[in-house]
View: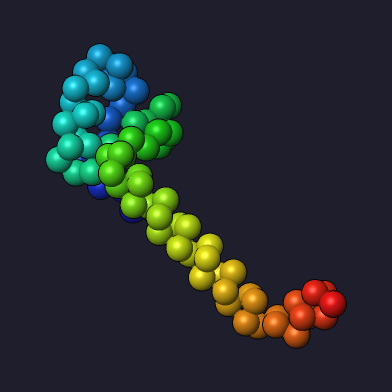
Length: 80
């Protein structure tokens, strides 16, 4: 995952100034909170979260279709 350095906030700063974190999310779609100088938390816009879940679900469905196509004969045998 690529991290935009403008979206990074320390844990201390996030605790003291959460409105800054909220503004980062509003402006850029996400914010990353560092804990012990390592990325630890990802805060994202709720609408972005919903679209990511939909994309993930579509991916799962496409993978399922592909597996069924590739293994149709095995599935037909199992169905007997």
